Image 1: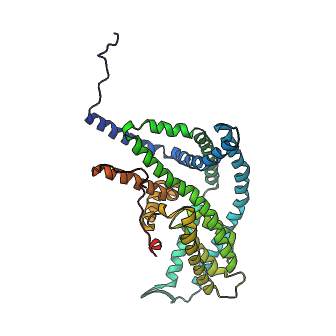
Image 2 (image 1 turned 135 degrees about the vertical axis):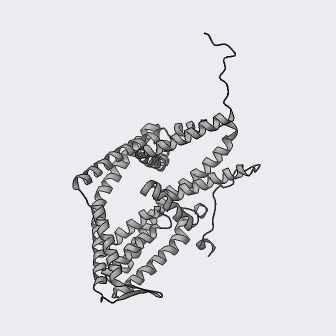
Image 3 (image 1 turned 30 degrees about the vertical axis):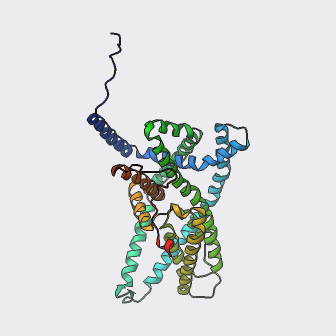
Length: 379
C-alpha cells in the first residue's frame, strides 16, 4: 500500500497530550530515583565544564587551537597542577582533622572533671554537666563507629570513589568540548513563540550560577586568606587548616562559617593561644571577636565586590534550601542548594506571571531574581 496525500498523522488532542506529559514526568521521576548514582558524576561533570569553559575560550582566543585541542590543554594543566596539589594537601588536612578530634575529646575530658553536682546555666535553665558530657560522648562514639567499620568495605568505597572520579573527569571533558551543541539541542526543543522567554530565563539563570561558581571561587580564596591571617594574628592553632576550611565552606552560604567557628572555639578552649598570655576562656571570647571581624569584612567588602548583592537571598531561605538539598542529594545537594533555589525562584516568577495572565510576565533587561533584603543589607 502506497501512502497518499491523505495519509497524514493526525494531531494529538489536548487530553492525550496531558496524559503523555504525565506519563513522561512519572517515568522521568522513576528513572531519576532508580539511576541516581549516574546523575552525581553527570552533575559534577556539568559543574566542572561550566567552570572551565572561560579558560578554554581564552586559550582559543590567543591560539589557533580548536575547541577540542584547547579543552585538552586545559584538562592537561588540571592534571599537572591540581592532582599534585591534592596529593600534597591530603596528609596535612587529615592530620589537622585528627588534631581537631583529639582536642574535642580533651574538651569533653575537661568538662567531665567538673564536680558531679556541677551544672551549666542557660538563662533560667540549668543542665547537669554530667548530662552534657554523656550526650557529647555518645555522639562522638556514634561518629567514630560510623566512620570506621570494615577495612575491606573502606577500600571498596575508596576504589568506587576513584572510578567515579575518572568517569566524572571524562564526562566533564566531553561536556566542555560539545557545550554549544548541547545548549543548542535544548534550545531547539523550545517552540518558536517562546524562544524569547526561554532566552531571557536562561540568561538570568546562567547569571546566578556564574555568580555562584566564579564569584564564590574567588570569595573562597579571599576568605581563606583572611581567616588564615586573622588566625595567625591572635595565635590560634592550625591557622592554615582553618583558612582552607573557611574557604571551602564558603560554598555553603549562611551556614558554612558557623561550622568552622565551632571548630575554632573547641581548639581555642582546649589549647589556647600560641603566644597571647590570656586564659583559654578569654581566648575563646577573642575568637568570637575574630569571627565578628570576619563577618563585617566578608559582608561589607568581599561579597559585594566578588559575588554581588543582587544575587543574594535571605539567609533563612538559604538554610531551608540547604536542609532540603541535603535530604534529597546529600552533600552535593547541600552545596548546590542556594543557586538551585535561586534558579527555581526565577522560573517560579515566570510561571506565576503566566498563571495570573500578565500581558508581559518578563521584560528584556528586567532581572528575574527574587531579591529579598537581608538584615545586613538594611543596616
